[in-house]
Amino acid sequence: MSQTRVFVVLAGAALSFTSAMAQTSLNQDRAYNAELQADSLSRANLQGGGGGFKISDGAFTLQIGGLYQTRYNMNWAGEGSAGRFQRADNNKFYNGFNQRIKLTARGTIADPNLSYGFQGDFATDGGAFNLDDAWGKYKWENGVYAKWGQFKLPFSREELVGDGYQLSAERSFENSTFTLGRSQALEFGIEQDVWRAMLAFSDGLRAQNTDFNSASEADWAFTGRADFKWAGEWDRFKDFTSFRGQGYAGMAGLGLHWEDEGSTGNGGPFGAVTRFEGNNTIAGTLDVSGEGDGWNIYAAFNAVRQDPSTPNANSLTDFGWVLQGGFFLTDNFELFARYDGIRADDDHTVRYTNSTTTAPTAPNNAISSISTRTLHFVSLGTNYYLVPGSHAAKFTAAVVIGLSKTDEIMATTNSDRYSSSGYDILGTEGGTKVGTLGSSKSGEVGLQLQFQIMF
Image: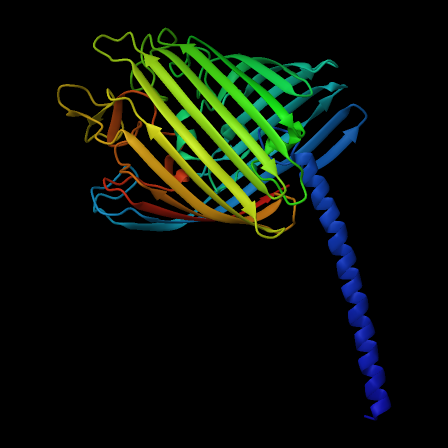
């Protein structure tokens, strides 16, 4: 082949490559803009999920979205007896995958002010499809709204921020202990420029998917939250991250919860959410958030008091706290750290049994006091956002360290240990998601590697 022909072939190849690269760049730009638009839609709901694909016919709209997180876990339980999720042979290393899959649908009906929302979750263990949210909402022009159905109670900001918008792979241990979770409720609220407030009347904490006569419900419950922001827009606080280029934003929030239980259904001290007959529960939370150009910080304090009317049962007051923050090294790369703790009441006890399906009964089972009353946890990690400024696709790596022994607090039903009195400490709301399995020695370490896609 002559030099001229070689030159022509090379020139043609270069032009083809340049054209392909230009087309690829154009497609990437289009995909980037579409992804940002989808992520912008996904921020419309405080309780997480995606905005997804939208169908509109006048005032009738439908948005379909979802969240997929796949997580690889490694856990070094350390020396000591087996915890709640460990084998009896005291194996010290565990590893494997789990995942979180959620599907959402929301929109408006006839009137732009009349909206609805549904969310379902595929269980990590077994894959059963469970209902998370099902609600309707009407909002008036003055910012007042009414909301009814099943949804998260307006209490802790960490819980209200959606699963796909957390700073780490999972919420804190403190949140797993003190969260109120979802309930069936009627809520009224108002949102103004610098403040907003919400008040819900419900079936009580963690009363998700229950019938009206269920023993897992409270007799009555009220939950309220008020937020005040001195900088930024409300949308800034629907996640914990502040990307580079965003301005300063600040907010403080206060939440209160009060419920009474024991007369609904056949309740008792080993119900699905550790309730007590005639128990009166009061909980409170206070949080402060600050965000700036590529940095964020969040702090919260929680307290709960239970006053059982059961004979010889002591009143219990527990406290919890969390401090976390993040900082971007590049537009895509974020570092974060979190410290959280729990202070259990001195009157907490643990009841031991060999049964794995039924609650233990005295006097055949030993009862002992919790030996570790103050627990500390540290989480360190990083996020890598595939598209700067968006949660739609990101990778998270987090190291979780238990600075205290954790076997006693892994107490709930269907385990070999039960809390005979007190709050459901690291019970069904936490489980294996929090990164620890329970160890009778301090120093348990968990590594979580997670990739998420949200649409």
